Length: 485
Image (cartoon, rainbow, N blue to C red; front, side, top):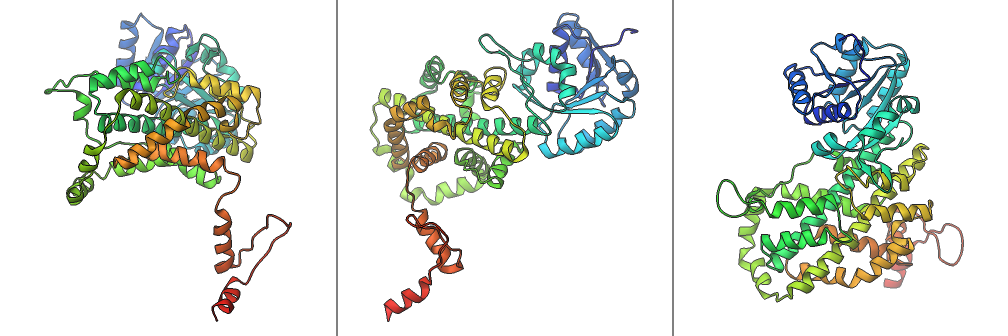
């Protein structure tokens, strides 16, 4: 080939292949490269089969880089950490001043900031771009979260606007997020919110199945129905699909044969660590992470179940008589209210980081680009966008007038579900943590006065008063000793 391509992509695992085909399908000729060359041939073969798409494969990094028009733009989709540094090293040797590298993986934001500085020293531009939507999204339209060099973003804005998911009333699901590692950070929190969402859905399933005794057929109908209303979302839709899949290796449904151990790659853990570092309460997201840790203790849980059988949880369950329809309706409302809390926590975390780093992130715009393509896409995000449009300085989603009303309307159902679960011996850590978050946030006075008094008693940490300004310390021990004499 003599004519140069518009862009390059290195790293042809599933996401890389699909994104390359998506870019080519939108009319941008693309060069592709992978260290294991069989993947290159596999990708060009797919390009032929999927409509003779303009994908050009290269088996060595030099010819790959030289095949791209200047200023060159190369997207990397390789495993986070050392492989990214290795790929940059391999490619940057052949790149020239003004060229640009984009990391499309789930990378720790500080690594992106370090690399952006290193690239700048070589005269190269750098972007860290969150990509959400899984393999399906990558192929047909993901949600894209690019952060870093604005100049680099401008090079490829025309491509990203076409490649991203398109939402009829709000446009392509991509925007320039902000400076430094902000794109990666926003994607990380997106994944944390996703952990929370998935946990809450699993709890809804558990209550309906364990207490309500719903069959997989009924569960499929319930989730399909929910997907027509306020809960309309990708995760609810795929949950309904899962309940309908029969086991291909035996009788019954596949979902019942899936081992109850949840894997994870680290973005949820990072989210909770960041929340702790920034003193942002994110209990819903944290509880979903804890649930994954506990799910991993399968063998221990099997032993614990035996040990506790004598006082059996099964006995508790047998006692509960429930009205199925009422339960389904209550669980739907509890799920929605809990979900509001999870998103409120994620948005507060993004805002706190944005303030700390001076990123000036626009929360309403983030809600907009999550409306399509990504794993947490939901009709509900439109409400979040509107809430931040009404008030960009909104302290918390819970106090937006519309969301506040929605929670008030649902709080009775929410409390009923959590109480029912507790009385039935079913854990709902996400729903319970969300409810506790709401109940704590809405109270003017908390028992924190006692904790501060304790801190002053044993550590002379001082306290403030409700009636007089200033810092105070009391010799609690001496006073208590005298009164005991």
